[in-house]
Structures are given as C-alpha cells and as structure tokens.
Image (cartoon, rainbow, N blue to C red):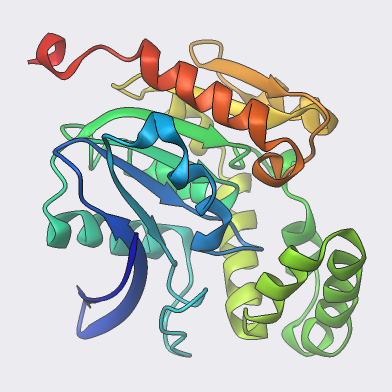
Length: 263
C-alpha cells in the first residue's frame, strides 16, 4: 500500500490529509481510526488475504498521524466526517464498506446518510452511541484545557505506555489541543442521543463489534443492528485479538449482498 498526502478542500482552506491506500478494483474498504490511534491501527488488517481483491484506504484524521494538525480546525466529529466525505469524492470512491473504530465509528455513523448511495456495509467497532460509552474523553471534557495539558494528558500517556508501547507511540504524536477538542466533541455527540437513532436508520447492512471486556456497550446498540463480541479483548480488539477480529470482518463481508444483487 502506498502513502499519499491528499489536498482536501474544506471551507475556506485546503487540508493536508494523509492516507495509506491501494487500488485493486471498484469495491473499497475504507477505515477510520479512533481518538488514541491513527491509520496504522489497520495496517495488519488491510494486508489480510481476504481483502486482496478490494481497493483499500486508511485515513489519518486531521490532527492525527501524518495529517496536518492546524490549530484553527475544530476537531469536531462532524467536521472530521465532512473531511472524510471529501476524501471519498477526491479518490472517486463509488462503492465501499466502511470500518470505523471508536471515534471512527462515530464518524462512520454520521456518514451513513451522506454516503448512503456508496456504502455496501458499515462496521462500527465500539464507536460511542451514548454518553455511557465515553471513557477517557469524559474525564477530559470535565477538565479545563490548562489542567488537561499540565496533568491529565501526561497521566493518560503514562497509563497507556504501561498498557502497550504501540499505543503510547501513537498517543505521543497527538497534540494536546487536538486530543482536547476532539474529546469535547465526542462527549457532546454522545450526550446528544442522536447517534443511536442515526445508526438504526442505516440503509446498508451494519455490524457493531465490541470487546468482551466492554460487553455493556451492547446495551446502547439498536435492536435492528447485528453485533459480534470479540473474546479476550478490550476496546482495541484489532490489537488484543486480531485473529478473531479478522474472522469477524471476513464473515461480515461474505454476508453482504453482491454488487450485482444491489443493482
């Protein structure tokens, strides 16, 4: 897969958005990462043999990974969704399965209607649906920026460093203002009660994937949405239990109506 920097028009500016992509055909797998990672979360997934015939893209959201980190960007969930939608337009993606983890799952929910004519399916990997789903972002939102910068963020980095070196590297690359503004928007959207309704109204097949340690998140998932538990896993199921995560995604893709059937 090649690394690219896309020039993405957004309101009165142009954003530098990094992406890892590979073009193999009309059908795409599009991946959106969460608050504590970047596109590299999906590196091993996108190398799996069952995705060989798909075109693939994993985007670094604005403020994350190799993408630009402008101070003037809002870092709201809805603005990140608008940027991803523009990436779809630039690359001319016409048919895709969307996979979003955590914040990426929330962004995916907001894209369900705008991309309804494009999406063959959507996998929401523990994207927040209600306020009870908020983890670190809830504590961040209860703090002012000065305290977050001086105390909470260093503590979070130390905690994540004890849990896994890869995640610590990703977190170290996220500026404090990006993490703080993103967390405020995550909490705002989680409190709004809009996400579960938008998820339930999806016009494409959807799957909610959750780690065994977070099975309580299933309580927020609409009855109309299928779900799958990843055993021996927490929030980062692609790291905790990659084999079962890959098998789950492969089965979901196999269950989708063929493109000919949709036509």
